[in-house]
Amino acid sequence: MSTPAPLRVFEWKLAVYRQVWKANLLTSLLQPILYLLAMGLGVGALVNKNGGSARLLGGVPYIAFVAPGLLATTAMMVGAIESLWPVHDAMKWGRQYEAMSATPLEPSDIVAAHVLWLMFRTGTAAAAVAAAMAFFPDVRSWGLIAAIPAAMLSGVALGMPLSAWAVSREREMSFPIIQRFIIVPLFLFGGAFFPLSQLPIGIRIIGYVSPLWHGVEMCRSWVSGTHMTALAALGHVAYLAVFVVVGAVIMRRLAKERLFA
Amino acid sequence: MTAGDEASANAGAPVAPLIHASGLRKQFGDFVAVDGIDFDVQPGEAFGFLGPNGAGKSSTMRMIGCTSPTSGGTLQLFGLDPAKDGPAIRRRLGVVPQMDSLDNELTVEENLVIYGRYFDLSRAEARRRAKDLLDFVQLTDRATSRVEPLSGGMKRRVTIARSLINQPDLLLLDEPTTGLDPQARHILWDRLYRLKQQGVTLVLTTHYMDEAEQLCDRLVVMDAGKIVAQGSPRQLIDEHATREVLELRFRAGSNAENEQYAAGVGDRHEVLPDRILVYAHNGDEALAKAIANGAQPESALVRRSTLEDVFLRLTGRTLVE
Image 1 (cartoon, helix red, strand yellow):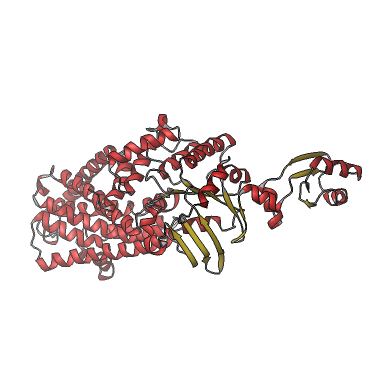
Image 2: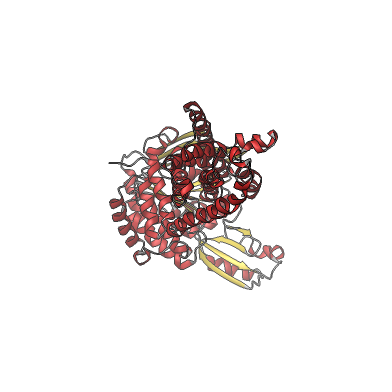
């Protein structure tokens, strides 16, 4: 029985990850717990005192508002980090992609394996946040399980265009700039920490176009059980899927240009 | 009977060539890296591309390895077309790239097993082959150490073991020993020689003439994208060089004024920046004549001609500059 090629490439990433997964898992669990304590309970205590807050937050305490956002922001950060330096490294310094190109593998296998890898990393990171959230009664819900794939999808949606960029770069100078001027603003203005309606329309747009907001909206709805129409959910999923597919198609083309010059 | 004779005897049989190239070209923008070359490689042969950096050897190797599309001419491997059957051809190739592409984070064994998985070997089969191959390259005791701290020579051996995991019909080696110390080179040559004796077809590039002489049954000399000569190392030397070479070294910077003493003492001579070479059937006789002419070299050396001399003759340049 032969294994599909992308899974065999995925095994490579997994073999490298196996050396760090324990430390990684511990961080993935501890970090959201600290975050929920500080933001949810600490900042939350201030926010909840404000008379108008409950209405703006959709009738929930602040921790219930911010925690689902944390699911999506974590997946997004992991998706971004796994896409810049590691992809560039596999192309240029470690030459693992070059090694693969000498085998029967094709660029599409490499890209498909990378999508699987991003799904795995963003999915496990989101699952760790969900596990941490289960310690907090205000956000403990069966909806957490459904929120994991939603968070994962927004992480992969940001990761794939960044991977396409990283695979084609000769140098990594642009990566810190991308981090500061693209990833951080998307993170801050993606609707995870406060409702976008709080912002002037010009800045609000950052939120609406960013993959993060679409993930946050879904996570919040699934976790807090607020209503979202099927059409709206489909819209969010479709919007994120476009990022994944377009990112993958461009990454495949650029990887092929580089590996098979 | 030498290995070279064996291979040419094999080549005499009517077998289809493993590689057939005619008018093969590679162009990057305006730059022509490979400019219409013709060659065939027969099963069981050790075939070399000899030439300086930039001669087009690596571009040729990448086309053979089906990771670089041809810009013109014909190229066939195993009777297949790389443009159409790249993955099917690569399944039967072993590739040792010029720069190591091992995963430094993983162990030696993991590197081999994971690479075997790219050829769709089962994990058990990949592990079994990895064990045998590490034995072959004498790295069994390093199987579970990470690749990163290994020496350059050891990494090359891991790369060679890795390239054999799919039991290739054809092994491509791009400058297999560049950058290695002499001892590591000899270990590597020994392993490659064994592979050759087992019947593995080798195609390699090198800019070391001793490497070409040691390993290649037949080679082509490349310069500026073209093949300037081909044959066995012995044939090339017989055809393009004399039996012996006299190397005369004079005080630094005085080669021009000393050239007169070397002129006419052999078949021909060549003035290099650091020495004057005299090509002669009998080097000692040539030396005696030069001294009779009044030459006072700081040192004189008589040696057999090598491929280096062939290359110098054909291109007017030395291989390693």
